[in-house]
Length: 497
Picture (spheres, rainbow, N blue to C red):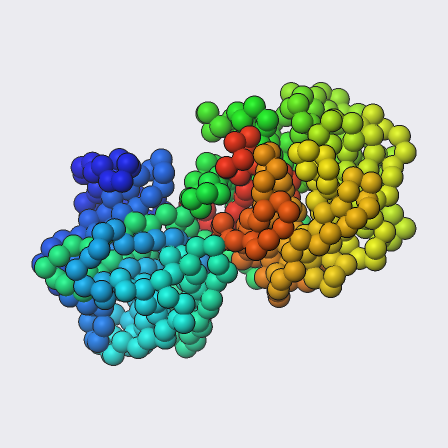
């Protein structure tokens, strides 16, 4: 084991006999190579650099360096990566690979990103058989995802900021237990080529028979740098943690778990329960006051038939004070002047957006179009309320004046877009996007989703995170005070961050 300073990161370089790194078990050369490969890892930044030699990965045998983990059943592999340096051969390759074994001629499937920008699904059906490929139309992708479901494989690639494009391969039998991981091949056995990988996730999806709101899988509390796209896992839990808020002082995140609210200290990376008295059935619609002194929460109150009622409580905890007169009411926003709360509520069979004084009183209905209006949140200057609405036929992002007038549609695309959150500097809107196969009025758990970013006045959104999540990922504003970082939750059945 030795250290390497590369690009400003202190990376721990580990030999093939060392302990597992991150989610992986081991690494080593596959096939005959003249120059043994290495793996370097920065555990704080969660970045891998894999160096590999090898003449090629083609024909009936392969030679490359492999960082792997044995996996079974359904799973999904996600990463972003790029080569370091100009390289020697334009056909050098890196990406994800799933193999039946560690022999040079074993069956496999991979996503191979070439040095010249070519991206392809490569696969070998039988031991010693020929390599086949399916090429992607996109050139030079740096985000790649490989999903396995029995003998079916879905490969997805994108240039960071763009949605995935996919290729599907069926009928490839690799066995139940496989070797899955990252690879680098130099396509020249006299040199070592290096590739850097970040946002590496080994994900086990929810079981197909799981029951929503009854069955849950594990959670990864993550922080995203929206400028670079780099993500870091801060904390993992086998329980369902949801919807982190970032405190205005920048020192903590607040999320819900099992009906309780927790404060997650960013310095110690440890959670602690916030005492909320009788409110022990809190959902993921909680909001902090602009001054950071109060916490608004949505509690399923038994005296109201289990419907969600909005309360406020001191940020350090205490006895909640009821605000909304009835339910269901789901809190989403607090006005910048601290005077009002905005929320989604079901009244007379329809879900609309309402406003109410923090001290309680008469609620004011702000939307009245048919269908679901949800996720209301004030802009930092108080000039707009941003929300998501299905009124156009799909779920899209809108904004309106604080009195409900002048509604303006900001997104109009194939995705179903939820929960717009405006950055503290007022420049950006971060939101969650479901794929078109999801019902526009539904925001389910445990789906492939995007986090996307657009200017506050609207414009072309760009993807800033590719993840497995959905409900609970980004329900409330989770921007850091610096307007550069945001917190969110992703999911995996067996946690392998």
